[in-house]
Length: 253
Ligand SMILES: [Zn+2]
Image (cartoon, rainbow, N blue to C red; front, side, top):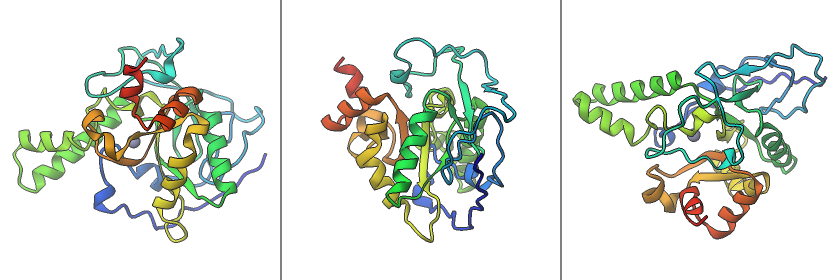
């Protein structure tokens, strides 16, 4: 098994303007040194192939209830403020080395995309991926506290926070189908270079930029060049070619 240990350098500063909604750098910061939690070595930080199944092949399952996302069309499940995640939604996770995890069904495409990006000199890494409802609530509470600290009363602070953080139960991150992508090394490559590559190529792997700049009125989410959602190759290509967002795509079906 090929193992690479990679220390993330300190250049993980997220400037305020990027500190929006789902974005969370904690994942990167907590990356220590190639811990393999399950029988794969999906090292999305530096790109390592799947390891033989001889390692501690234990599967991580979502703690919160039973996920029943095995029906057809799981890739196209719409989750937004109006469409919360179905109760008892279950996710089977593939644990990634940099303390990230995704729905096991999207892992192969994600790895392929990262491998191809790296082959072209792009340095992507995942800053946030699967989140529990508790984690999402934590992010919300932090954001509310931030606004309160700047002098807003609780109700106003909550309203403002909800413009940035998805209300728990309505975040795609809780499905394990979305990842926030940034640069693995700010000294070498700006995140915008990574996002530019993703914007042009992600559809080939079944991923879409979920919250484009020109669709904020429909998605209800600010422009998030880092947030990618897996929808499957067919849908991704159509969405990309037509320049529409997921809500519009589903409406047209
Ligand atoms: Zn996100």
